[in-house]
Length: 106
Image 1 (cartoon, one colour):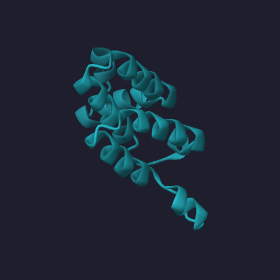
Image 2: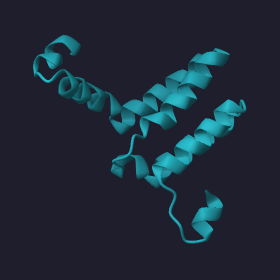
Image 3: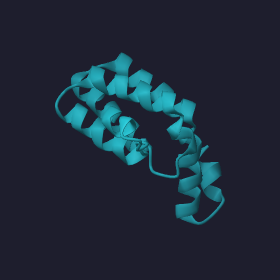
Image 4: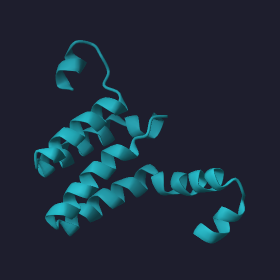
């Protein structure tokens, strides 16, 4: 990602997703948290139409696999900070096609 930026290209959410998946697949969870901090600092998550939840999901799964409950809590807090929980509720309502989804989920 640093190389992309030095060449004038701005990394997109999909680049962070791919890198996060590579890091957690190779057991580099601490590097995953460093990447999460980097993407949060870029503010890209707040202005993205892409599915940025994949970044969080990969790291959360890795934390769960190794039994890192503190790490899982950190990821969950980051998800809530970005507001992805509210978006999940909205998506449920749209998929079900009725407003009643809000009453059953909330």
